[in-house]
Length: 213
Image 1 (spheres, helix red, strand yellow):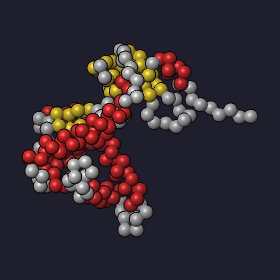
Image 2: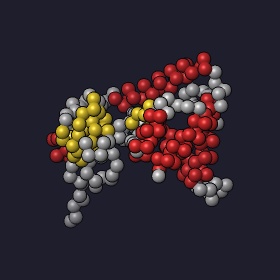
Image 3: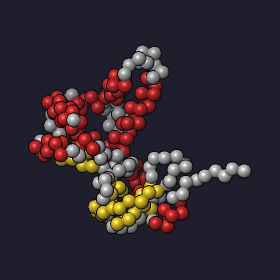
């Protein structure tokens, strides 16, 4: 089963790099499975699920995914890497990433993994990363209109799909807190930035159809 594979990979990581305190994941089903939940509980590891398709809460992992995808595209045209599998390409890319000086921290990620960064520098580096992230989130929120979330029926912006797809879809939801809703059918969480008033939904839900003359 998939969660057993995840358990093994996590155990391998713990045995190599040490125990972690918290996992942040974007609603990956493998981490929601009961055996995985019990495994994390037994290991005293907290888990946090980010809001579905929310770029601010997923910013770190989305940035890494974008870097990996871009390098995979480049390696496909590289003579040396052309016949490598996707897994081999990803290992090569992670090696590049870990051994490159980070633009914000001015250090290599591999130096953290290998314990070459003194603990006295952790707080300073954490503050640098957090400040950059805070500036990024403030920039995104600058022109964002606030939405009052309500229990029951809400209309969620579709993140994926072309111009001929509907822009919003209706869900039955419950309130988690003042910032988040949860779909009562599948358990997915949504940040309030994805919620649109009913009138907006009615005005924009029909797909665009090109007229033929």
